[in-house]
Figure 1 (cartoon, one colour):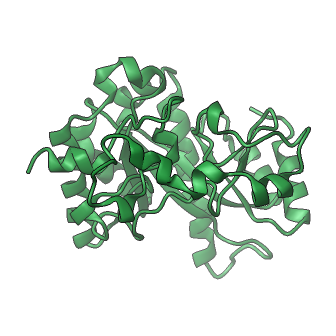
Figure 2 (figure 1 turned 180 degrees about the vertical axis):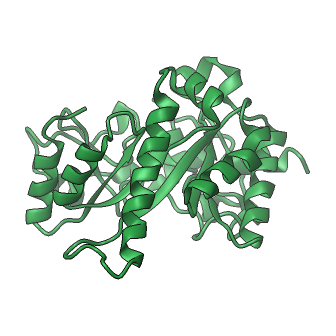
Length: 281
């Protein structure tokens, strides 16, 4: 979307920062890809949300699937070149994975999606449900029910036991599934070790967090001062424990109120992963 993206990448590279991106692949032509590699691109994630019909339905663009698959193939080809005797000088393979937002239409197609991606050459796959925000808030077809969410956990755990690197996203304390469905235990790092600067200069943490929790703006505030003195709602989350479902939760010390991006403007929690799993016990 940004014509100056390579220039931004070069500026980051010149300051010693490796940088990466998440893409739907629509604009990632081979020429653009090579331009970004030369600008210091070091990691990339491609969104592929299902087989062609379902991916196009979710993304609402007729070329969405074509773009995602083209991007995945470009990256797989780039990384494969490092296994040959004539590997590129001065370049490194990209850290790379594919992410899939699972919904009502795709939950039963996970094995077919896996087979498609593995056939292309993907070896790192992240899957997760869609949160009830944006257009998903009023479209139940986008949201997994509790049984489907449990099925997703079981699918990931089984894939990992079979040696495939499939993982759940970073969000949400998952109780007995912790350690079974991703490479690390749950922690919301937003405002703790992660900050974000949005396109309008707003200082946030995770880019999905609502405006109420912004901590300033780089066009009027010192980022370092904000980082040192702001983010109090993130670093002391005791305010979350004053309301349900966190108030009497025995898992509070492990979860600390779930991800900040799941907090509404009024502070209430829109989704509790642990509660969903316990509902079926």
